[in-house]
Every structure is written in structure tokens, then in C-alpha cells.
Length: 121
Image 1 (cartoon, helix red, strand yellow):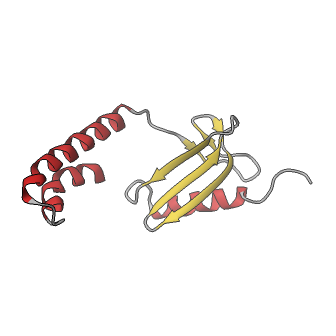
Image 2 (tube, rainbow, N blue to C red):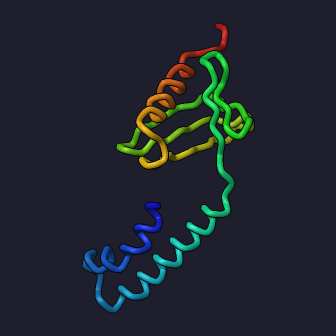
Image 3 (tube, helix red, strand yellow):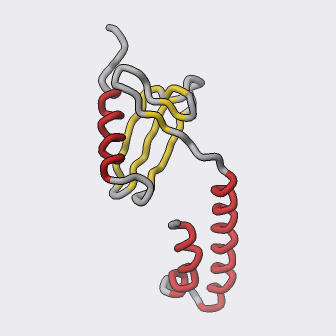
């Protein structure tokens, strides 16, 4: 939803930026093109399913275990980071309108419960 708002507001945002008037139309068109491509990619992306299991069991994302999940709160956004078994890092960003306050709290508690080491010394 935020991408569509930026797409619609681009002419006003760029006009208010103080950019020279002769450069504004090409920049607006470029902004629209980039946002349209991003929207197209997002529409084609599959939905991700995050399973919050009981505390000793790991979180599952699309049936795959998440290694070392960490949740970063960035204002109204939540960013879930983890380490893949292949040593790749993964990131999910939750926009403010995606999760209800109860779901946000549940996600924070589930990740916090897994930050305590489950591995034996």
C-alpha cells in the first residue's frame, strides 16, 4: 500500500524537493517506472507463512526452520532477521498495517523466547 501512495504522490514530493523545474518531469517518470516494477515484483511474489511454535521448537518460515531469529523494531515497522542453514541471512519486513497489535506482541514474545540459548553448554 505504501508503494502505491508514493507512486501517486511522486509529482508533489518531487515538486516540493526544490529540484529544477526542467528536471522534474523525467524524475517523476523514472519514479513511476521504478515503483511500477517494484509493485509488479511484489504481486508476483508468493505469500510467506510464518509459524510461531511453542518456545522450545524453532520458528518456521514456509516450513523451514529459522536459525537465530532476531526482531528489530524500527518505529512502526518490525524487521525479522535470521540466519539460513547455508550461512545466508534472511529478512522479513512487517509494515504497520500487516499485523494487529496482538500479533505484533506475539511475534515479539516468540522471538525473544528463542534468543535464549537452546543449545547445551
